Amino acid sequence: MSRKADFPGLVTSSGKPWHYLDSAATAQKPQAVIDAVTKALGVDYATVHRGVYTRSAEMTLGYEAARRRVAQLIGGREDEVVFTRGATEAINLVAYSYPNKGRVLLSTLEHHSNIVPWQLAGWQIDVCPLTPDGKIDLDAAERMLTPEHTMVAFAHVSNVLGSVLDAKRAAELAHSVGAKLLLDGCQAVPRMAVDVAALDCDFYAFSGHKLYGPTGIGALWARGEILDAMPPWQGGGSMIDRVTFEKTTYAPPPQRFEAGTPAIVEAIGLGAACDYVAAIGLDAIHAHEARLVAATREALRGMNDVTLFGPEDAAGIVSFAIRGVHPHDLGTILDEEDVAIRAGHHCAQPLMEHLGVDATARASFGLYSDEDDIAALLRGIERTKRIFG
Ligand code: PMP
Image (tube, helix red, strand yellow):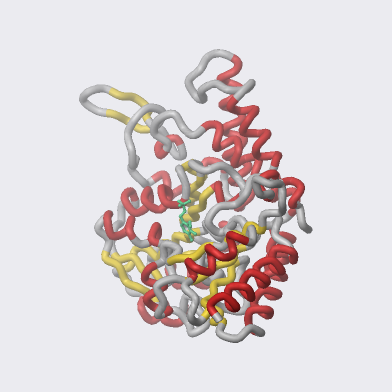
């Protein structure tokens, strides 16, 4: 399915192919998104929600249409989608505003943005361990959950290991003790079909820039009745019903949670990104990335001194280590070969501690990745091994 031609970013400054294997950090943008952003920033540009003139009314329609596209992509209702700056802000919003603060069950593999907000907002944190192959151990979760838990917050797909959560079972377990389930869908939304209704989760957070959209925009989906019961998080324009110095009443969701002039252009770009991936189909994207993961894992398994992390059925992401080579050195040498991987703790320091390493090398795929990228990665690894020989 290689669609490299749609992505102007996938060449080096000298016009050679750039083997971009860091899509889990942020995805390259298709021309359709770049065009939508350019148009929104140019000939269509105006504010939303407040203007009485035609351009503003049209921009408002465009902004709200983007919300509809996000809702359609993940199977939620339009008025249940709150635009945020990204997954980080979405999780912070829930950690601070969910009225029934208590114990939250997280897991060892969470990204820092699904750990620190809960700490800052004063939740009691329990940590669910992982299975030997690096999935969240839901049998352990079942044993750990108590009626004191009011929230379970798990990554739908791990940004380091690619492990896919059995989200339906996680929802059943959370609900069996009266807790809500928040899914951090940052790595899932770009690489598998997500249907929040079928998953039966309560909150779903993701970032637009990993879904081939712009930075500075993402979404929190939450069940309507839960959002209705949540107080505002930030105050300002657009989130109010009526303001006096004595008392302010608030707009209904989702506006209640969108204080200030929103990221209008970015939201429209995200809407275009939703259209782009929907036209290809997330099942097709998932199958494509699964083939690339299988091929990469098989090739790396055949090399001496390589340790592979994560499960065989990882989604779109392969983390590994080479004995005697620091991941940063590998990343630097690969860069000389126009191969971009990520090396580091991937904002998951507790997981690094669990794996007994301070960093991993991570190759992560997007819908544009192909066998040439894998071949370039493998050539670069062989060269690195010779250098460190
Ligand atoms: N959760 C996961 C699983 C992630 O991979 C990331 C980004 N690396 C985040 C949360 C945070 O996303 P953002 O920085 O876009 O808010």
